[in-house]
Image (cartoon, rainbow, N blue to C red):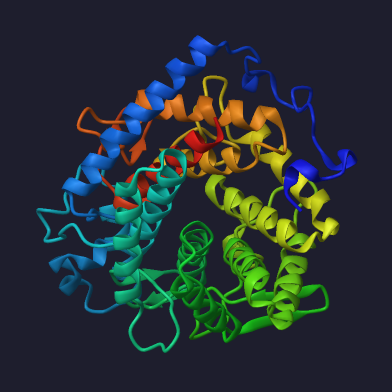
Amino acid sequence: MPFDRVPNRYFIHDLSHRMPQNAELSTTAGPAQRDDIIAILEKSRLQLEKWIEHAFYKGYEPFDGLSSFLRLLTFNHPFAERILIQLVRQCPVNIRPIIGIKPHESTKGRAYMAAGYLHMFVRTGNQHYKTQAIACLDWLMDNKSPGYADYCWGNHFDWTNRQGRLPKFEPTIVWTSLIGQTFLDAYEILGEKKYLDVTTSICEWILALPREKTNSGTCLSYVAFEQSSIHNSNLLGAAMLARAAKYTHEKAALAVAKEAVRYSCTRQLTNGAWYYGEAPMHHWIDNFHTCYNLDSLKYYFEQTNDATVLKNIQLGFTFLIQNFFEKDGMPKYYPHRIYPIDIQCASQAIETLANYTAYDELSLRLSLKVALWTIKNMQDKSGYFYYRQLPRIKVKIPMLHWGQATMYKALTRLLTKI
């Protein structure tokens, strides 16, 4: 059931009375203003597209510090590796070329570009975008994680965090599910069975993951080699299983998806937010993971008609718009402070708000406002988007999936909704 057919009692038809004063939006926009907005978005999208293609789909990522030759100085100690990653990540200037970190591929970045190209193909009918999308999808099929029979994907660099190490190419449910959504888009738009075969394989990989079983739902693991319970990854996996089941008719997959959704919905906070995870060290709330949760619940509902999640969607959506945006459209990383202003928060907010256009008219208006603010304040004249804005400095490092591909997908998605 699409959101525009949800019974009226479930809609938030007018969120303006729920919005804080600093988030009010104009409700008037004439045809001329609409054309001007489309022109701004289209110019930004095209500049970004050219930059990414000129860079051959390569760039940096926030957590790629272990790709440096300085890793030798960590002596393979996890804490020292974490310090190196954070030093590289937090440095306001791009020291990566100096310390041996080269621009690299990104599987999630390539999938997001494929999604953007598919949006543009649907919007314009231009065969060029179809060709570009197919090339990206072919690349993804050729570059799945080694060591796994099924399709799955991970980072192109080693990563160490508080939970442990994530080796290069080790797949995660986050990347695999988000990439899987693009293959489902491709199947629906292009009709090629090979894309459905890929999604079937992806679901087999997800179903084989460890799970945390509780009396109030089951949590899919973030990774395959141990149980790691994180809300956004759990819901992304559930959404992938539910959406694919529309074509595969796998009842077992739907049952797993339902239990995964129950796990995260029963742990939603009373104000509508979700912690990143239930472990004490994961008790933070941020913009783009909240967006992942809302997108996933929307996909799940539309495939299952499980109306029990609508109250969770309403609470979560209201929390999102009340806590993560300033009056001028500036997106916030955390609900309680403005900085850092992060490009992935901006791009994911634009996309999620565009996805919720049928949920409430205000969602599209807010998506446009965030997009226009981001283009004005975060896009370089060369076409790429800056990584972050801090109180006194812009961090102008060109992140690939984190910044460029996410923005390309978001802008193309928004253009399809206007």
